[in-house]
Length: 277
Length: 263
Picture (tube, chains in turn purple, brown):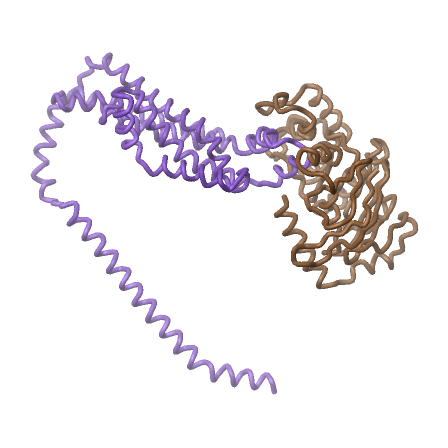
């Protein structure tokens, strides 16, 4: 009896259910259409705002060809003069990464919700990390060039501050994702807070932090090349000078050096990270 | 000597999980606590370790009432009280030897253990503790590479390194095969006798309790049903502990949540 009733009830409910389904289907199709149109509109407006003119690419090809003709062969006689700026570029990145790591570690400890000593410290650290990350390194470089003058030092500072933002966030996330059971077990032995950090938290997350830092160094080497454009030293500054003086053969030499530096940094960073994994 | 007097724990939802519990464990004694889910076994251990603050009662470790301690005094008291759990929580990337020696951290000033270091004498002692649990040959191996049974033995060695007077074991064999379970229980029994440790062990395996306990304590609904030498514990009285009580199941879940929050 009850089975018959439930079958009847199901039958009665079927037209209603299929009606509701068709409504839901229609709404889904409409939403998809609106989203597609919105996507197209966004794409079109970007072409308008950036004043994209594909014809200019065709007319500009002669200028490009002329530039390349004047840039070959690269002027290898300028190689000795490029050695120091190259060292500066790599050292700006190394300095920035080291400053970033040193400042990011304590900030990450405060900004990790699972080990932060207080909510105020958490929000304070998150605020500093957010600010350091939100402002691009090029803008930090401009600010530091104004503050401490031209040269590699403002470049190193700019990368350091920006790295605090990037590393601080990733370090904090790494700490938040770690397994806390071994840490609690260590606390239960009567270990002090700092001992729990040095013997529990640090060995657990160190390989990941080193991997992140190496990746950051790789990124910083790329960034330090550009920072020279705003007067923050390194090979970028020499590249800008050569371009302003129309020394295109020197420009091509500097571009080859940049290519080698970036590729070497990328390969070394990847190899080291693989060993740490 | 561990003495628990009129211990009561009431959860924030008002439920009384431990109700005036009295218990004592003498040095050299292995006491096994049996009881169904939510009966209050884990809450009892967490209260003794002061992961929870009891609502009433006293927990005496020697001449110190743990219920009255906080902060640095509680940390100092915890040095004498080791705990192992179902999942041995080791630092996976550190060596077995380092994991064992970390049990002594609380006995040293921070500067003595700076940058992840440990005093030489503690590392030597850790090697001796590893020999006690039969794992000295794995001293230099990473803890993450060990089997479940080996990890549990390392956790016991770390507890020994702590030089405690009381060892609390919360279902230490729950995730081990029967052979490894027997090994761990044999080890706990030996340690209780040779190191004069007061061992309080929560178990679900009734046969292990019969095999290794000096005394068996049965808990149901937060109250002690019996506290007897193992020879006097009848199968019927043990079976009665496991008659399902839905309220107790809910209490078990709440206990786990609360312990997680406390940790």
